Image 1 (cartoon, rainbow, N blue to C red):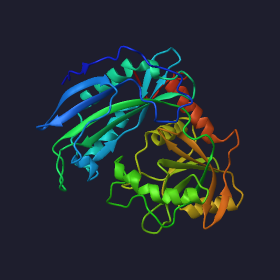
Image 2 (cartoon, one colour):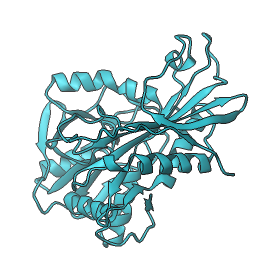
Image 3 (cartoon, rainbow, N blue to C red):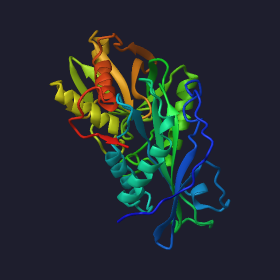
Length: 349
C-alpha cells in the first residue's frame, strides 16, 4: 500500500556548525508526524520542526504509553546518504509497540516517512568521520482522558539531530547489586520510556560515587551481567568476543548484532551466553587482558576503563590494538561506504 505524505518545506535553510552543540539539542528543520484516529493512520505530513500542542489529559503524560527508536544516517564516501539498517530498527520498534499495546505503523509508511525526511534534511548529515544524523522515530498516546486504559489515539513522529561522539572518554562503571532496570516478564526488551526512567535513580547514585554508568545485573540474584547503562555490553577475553544472550530483560541491539556479524566474518570466536560478573572480575584479577565496552546506536562503542564491584576497582584493557576498536572501525567503514556492504545493511536515500 502506498501512503501519501504531504510536505511543507521551510524555505530558509539553517544548517550551521553543530559539532559544539551537545547531543540531541539541535533538531533539523523538519519533522514527520502522523495521527492515529478511528483505527487508522491519517494526516501523514512532513513539516517545519515545531512544538506540539496537546491536552494535559493526554494519556502519554500519565500512564507510560510511549515508545521510541534510535537510528543513524551517514554521509557516504561518494556523497550519498545511508540510513543504517532501518528494517531491523522497524522490527524492534514494532515489537516495542506490541508490548505497550500501541498500534503498529505500516512498514511502507515508516520507510517512506524516513526516506522523505532524511532526503529533505540531508544537508544536516555531517561529513566528518565521527558524525552522523541521529534519527528518532517515536509514538505517544494522545487520547484526552484521565483513567488507566489503552489509548485509542496516537501520534507517530520522526525527528532528527546531528550527532558526534557520544562519550568523550572511556567509562567507569559499577556492578549494580541492589537496583534493577528490568525483570523477566517485564518490558526490558522494549524501548519504552519507563525502562529509561527506572534507570535514573541508580545511575544518579553511581555518578555520586564517581562512576559514569552502572553495569546492570539480573533481578533475581544480581549474578549475571545484562547491560551497561543504556547499552548492550560486550567483552573480549583471550581473543573471544562475549556478550549476554537476548532475553526479556535485554534490548535487541542493532549495533550489538552488527558487531557480532562482523566479528564472525573476520573469524573471531564469539560466544553469546550468560556471563557472571564474577567471571569478568576473576579474569581481571588474574591479570588477563580483558576488554569491556558498551554497544549502542548513540555511542556505537563506549570503551569501559574501570569496573567496580564490592567497592574494589578493576582496570580493563584500552590499548590501541584492542579488538573493540577494530570492530568499530570495520562497522564505520561499512556505514561510510569504505568497504563492501555484504549484509545489505545500508539503505541509500
